[in-house]
Amino acid sequence: MKLLHIDSSITGEHSVSRTVSKAIVEALTAGDASVEVSTLDLAANPLPHLTLDVLGNPDGSDELNQFLASDVIVIGAGLYNFTIPSQLKAWIDRILVAGKTFQYTAEGPVGLAGDKKVFVALARGGFYGEGQPAAAFEHGETYLRAALGFIGITNPTFVLAEGIAIDQATREAAVAKALEEAKALTVAA
Image (cartoon, rainbow, N blue to C red):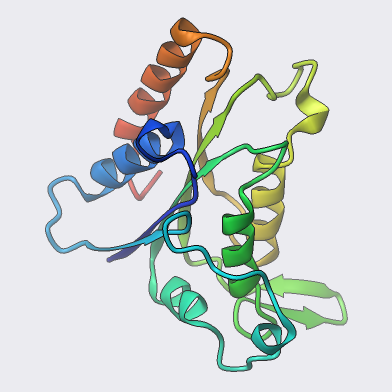
């Protein structure tokens, strides 16, 4: 099994999403030395924004090929200004490729990457879940679900750490809860 671990947080060692994504990878690889893990740090090695020459590349990018070769993808992301980091968006722009990860049909688009399992560690400074006053401003999980669903990945697993910017006690409780969820994950989840 090939696992691709992507981190996009710009906060380095203080990143909750990095802490949780690392715990997810550890849970998914525990006891299985055959798992090949590749890492991609989009904050340390940011991709340039999408340009026409990249969009028009029929052979795809290195990022697309790495994605296609992976069975499991673990993504660490923070919610910045109501959505995902632009570094992660630049990566997504390279994996949403007509004819490779989706195709257009007379009945609408069809995803071609549904054989992959995706886990997302998403950290949010406030509370953006259903029923919360700021729920309408949450465009991280909703965007990722839409983009992944477009390419056929309709059941990604999200591990959320919410309220991490409220105060230290709320942050610690959110991280502990997320780490507990992460440690219980399996590829079959």
